[in-house]
Every structure is written in C-alpha cells, then in structure tokens.
Image (cartoon, rainbow, N blue to C red):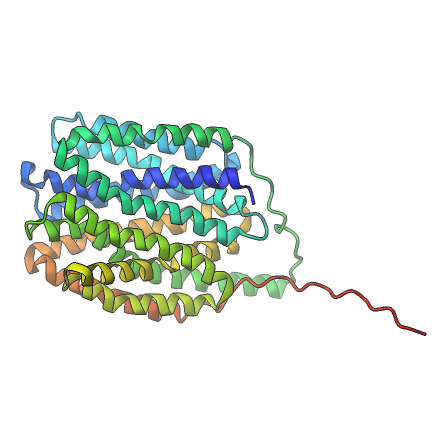
Length: 398
C-alpha cells in the first residue's frame, strides 16, 4: 500500500468536503438577509452540487489520461479560490455564482481522488484504501457544518476566506506525493475470457448499472436532503447555527464511520446483503432523529448516518471493477450520479416543503431507504475473496 499517496488524497478529500458541506449552512445563514424560501435554499444547494457532479465523468476521463497526477490538487485549489472570492460578493446571485464555479474543483478532485485511492491500495487492499479515502471525506462533511456554524455566528461570511485558506497546506502535500503517474493495473488484461464469458459480463454490467441507478437515487435522496434541509428545519425551531451545526455534524461524522465499516464488510461478506441490511435498517432511525431530542437524537442521528453510508464505498468499488481500465471515468459517472440525483431530489423536496411543511417532507424522505434496500436485493451477490494459496507438494516416502 502506498501510504503517502493515500494520505495525501485522503486529506484532500477531508478539506474539500469541509468546504462542500458548509454550503447549506451558508445559504441558511443568508436566508434572513435575502428573504430566501426553503425551495430557494434547496435550489442553491442543488446548483452547487450539480456543477460538482455533472463534470465528474469528464474529469474522470482526464484523471485516467493523466494517470492520477495533478488534477486532485488543482481541484482543491480551484474550489478554495472561489470560496475566498464568494465572501466578497455584494449580492446573493453573485455569491452563488462564485460558489458554483468553485464546485468544478470539487468535481475534479473527487474524480481523480478515487483513482488515486484505489491505486494506492494496490492489488491486495483497493477496497480498504477506498474506504479510508471516503472516511476522511465523510469526516470533512461532518466537520464542515460545525466549522461553518462557528464562523457564521462569530464573524459571518468573513470567515469563509479563513476556512478556504486552511486547505493550502494539503494542496502542497498533494502536489508532492501525487506527482508520479500511477502504474498500470496488473489485473488488466490478465484474464482471457471466451466470447460467452465476455457477453455474460456485459449483460451483468448492464443489469448492475440499472440497479445502481435506482439504488443510488433513493439512497442519495435521503442522505443529501437531510444534509441540506436539516439546518433549515432546526433554524425554524429557533436553534442557533452553532448548535444545529453540531447536531448535523453527528449525523455526518457517523456517516464517515459507516463508510469505513462498509469497506471492511464489503471484502468479508455478501455485498448485496450488506447493502440491503444497512439501508433497510437506516429507515427507522431516520424517522427517529426527526422526532427526538437530547441523547435520543444523538443516538438516532448517529446510527442513521452510519447505516446510510455503509454502501458508499462498496458501490463505487463494484462499479470500478466492471471497467478496470477506466476507473476514473466509471468512478466519476457513479459518484457524479450520486451527487446529481440527490441534489435534484433535494430541490424537489424543498419545493414540496414550501407547500406541505418541512417536517412532513422529511418524514417521507426518511422512508426511502426501504426502497433502496429492495433494489439492493437485485444486485449480484459479489464479494472479493482471496486467491487460494497452493499447498506445497509432499514428498512420497519409498
């Protein structure tokens, strides 16, 4: 395992997701100043996420072409620059424009970061390395609302440049440890498949992609809608930005632990059942976190965040194994669709919330993991097994 490369790309994932997860907090903070409705907050978050998501396949292909060099570091630097500029914009449209242009950097980083993380794990530990990469990213998502809640309450938007500038040491680290091109995957071209085997593999890949589409859409709708709309839900209850940033941080940080746990379980057990059990068990805890307070909220939010995130790294590794020569492109497509589908659904949910109430909409969203679990039952029962070790031949005594 290439530890330096893995740590560089994982730290990059951490800092860029600290910035990404602060967007909903920033928009909620501005809702009073610019008289924004729930749907307008959801629309702003959707535009930011769409810009980051839809470019990921393009950046993924570029990451394959550049063989993992430079792109991830450039992505973090780009996003940080536009976060700094956004703080000085005099109007909401200009601020949102700056943020969404900066989101291209997030798309570039995620597409390149997945390739580097997978390659850093080598032949033996690609799933483990990928889960570590997402553990850092989810931790950044958890810390972002807490950091944003603190500086928004203390100094307002003037805190954005400080948060963005703090990413620069990690950018330098990525340029140092990710400058060498990635080696070719030794497993590519190692197997020789017959025509029937090739056709079967293509049919399997098509079926898996179709199941992924519905599974990802349902799961992402709940996860991203909660992340985007919970700040407004708690703000309407009179809770301070600092406190509801911490409350959302519990949900997101436990999601980081769930992502890491999913990487471990995906190598040891039936991947289809891991996804099924984690998503179906998430639903009751999603409902509970909307109806509890105090330590019951912390327990419910923590378990819900963890269970929703268990399938994350499993889905991506399964997809990349279908086309090992284009891991950046495939990873960009899958992760981009995760972000885009969740963002669009979040905006639709926010629009309904203006008419039917935010609590009612969040309760409906909390039940969607049940549908995602049903989709998981139609996925192939795959799991990575270690190759058998040949036993030494025993000498036969005469």
